[in-house]
Structure formats: structure tokens, C-alpha cells
Image (cartoon, rainbow, N blue to C red; front, side, top):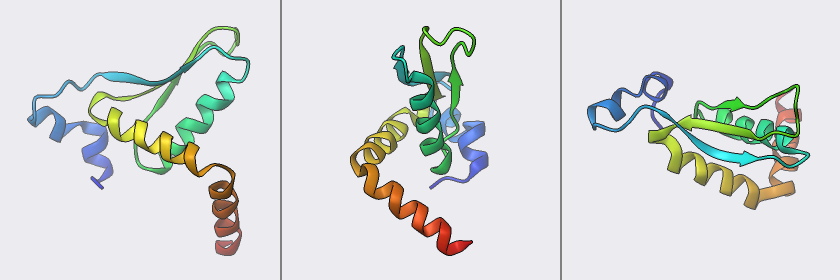
Length: 102
């Protein structure tokens, strides 16, 4: 994996001529959209993919989005898909690992 500086600065992407804008990797206006956006951001953060949540905390009936740098969009989508596929068993394994390290 690239180091944190490369991910946040987009230096490799800029050298390659890619756009350094932000792209939406998740979007929902469901009743639990904010919670899902927070979970997705957590998955991305733990995999060193910078992400930000865009959404109205005062009006939860409007859409929440998670955005990542465009050059990391495909990697972010894969991380989310892997996390969703792993589901509950991965969460329990991660919790057990955290407890062993404490």
C-alpha cells in the first residue's frame, strides 16, 4: 500500500495526470444512511483511504454521502464490497483481535 502522504497528497495521481477531485463511493437517503456512512468511512479509514462524510446532520431525511479522492475510488469500492461480504464474522473476528491486543 502507498504511504499516507502519497494517498492524501495525490502526488502519484497528479504525476499520472489523474483528477484529484472527490468522488462519491456511497450515497443513501434511507433512515439509517448516517450510520451506514459512518461504518463505510470507518472501513475506508482503517484501510488508509481518506474519506469524508457529506450530509445534513440536522435534516436526516436528506442524503448522506461518503466521498474519497477520485484516484482511490476503485480501491474504496473494493474495500466496501469486501467488508460487506465478510459481514458479521469479520466484525466478530476484529473485535476478538482487539480484545486480545488490550
